[in-house]
Every structure is written in structure tokens, then in C-alpha cells.
Length: 114
Length: 114
Image (tube, rainbow over all chains, first blue to last red; front, side, top):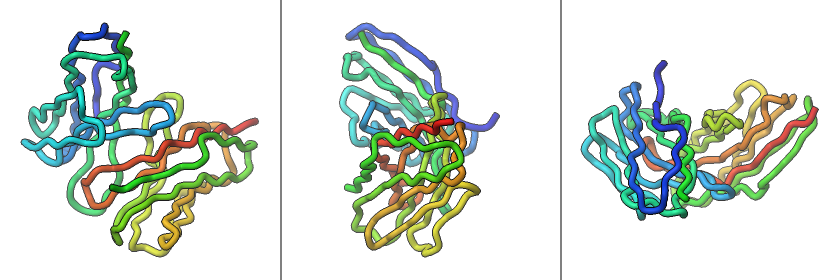
């Protein structure tokens, strides 16, 4: 099925551990995004990639790094996890041209840092 | 920076009745796009409806419609004939230009009671 695929769906980390969240889309979208969702705060943008080869910081980039591996894939890395990074993470993508038709979201990753 | 505010953290409605969710935003731009997303317990983000700021006509999608007041920077969502499956978190979102960053409100948890 066409869409955005995120892995893993659930993860528990110990403080200080590292991990990479994977995201891939098969809709030939140019732009990809990583958001985190916390109760009462909506979704906040961590990093985004407007096109292959470019990445930019969003609202809450500290503690994260990203890689736009190719047009399809956009990964998010936590180098040294902290309890404050406990959250639900969403990857999203959209086409860059034409009238916006909204973002397509992955199913999310629930990350717990203990 | 654009901000989106949803002042109703929780709302409830009886099945078959009508409910309106509020959203306000702040921007200095004249052209932009507004969206309502639904997030059921499955966690999946689902696009409900979108509105282009340059269109005066309010968008409608089946039982979902918006009241877009550009001068007041208000974008409310009306759900008619509420159904149990409408129980979800609803997010208002703002996009300045195609492919630019999507800014979300805090969300409104809607519960439809039988």
C-alpha cells in the first residue's frame, strides 16, 4: 500500500542509549518531516527536508539528527537518549508543488526513555 | 512565526448531534492553507478537510464543514450528525505555502457519547 512507513512502532531505551527511527515513503514526495507529539502540545516539528539533499531544523531540534538518505528515506537519530525525549514520533511527507493537499503521516513510533 | 491555538482541550457530544471545534491562528501572510486532522485511538493522522485562504467559500466534506473567518483568523470545524467513530483527537493546522512547515494546534479531544 502506498504511504509512509515508519519503523519501529514501539521502542524502550535506557538513558544514554542511541537509536535511529526509520521512515520511507513511496509517493514520490519531495518534502519529508519529523514531528514529536506530546500531551497538550500538539505536534511539534523536529527537522524537515524540503528536497533530497537538504535538511533544516524545526521547532525542537536539540538532541536529534537527521539524514535524507535519498528521495524515499528520511531517518531520525537520537545519539544519547534522555527521558525528555519520551514521546510519539511521526514522520510525514508531502509533494512540494501545486496546491497543498495535506501531509501523509506514518503510523508513529512510541518511544519511552527510562 | 505562525501560531495555532485550540482553546478547547476536551469536548463531548451526543450521537447524532452537531458539535463545533474552535481554532484561531496568527499570521501576517495573506495566502495560506488551513487543515483539520483527526487522530483516532489508532494514532493514525487522517486529513479531514482543508481550506485555501484565498477562497471565500467554506470547505465541506460530507458531515464535516468549516467556518473560515479570515479577518478574525478563525477556522472552526463543524461535525454534523456525530457518530461514535468521530471520537478522536482533532488538530487544526496551518501551512503558509506549499511544502512549507505545517504548524499544529494543541488538539481537542472529542468524545461522542451513545
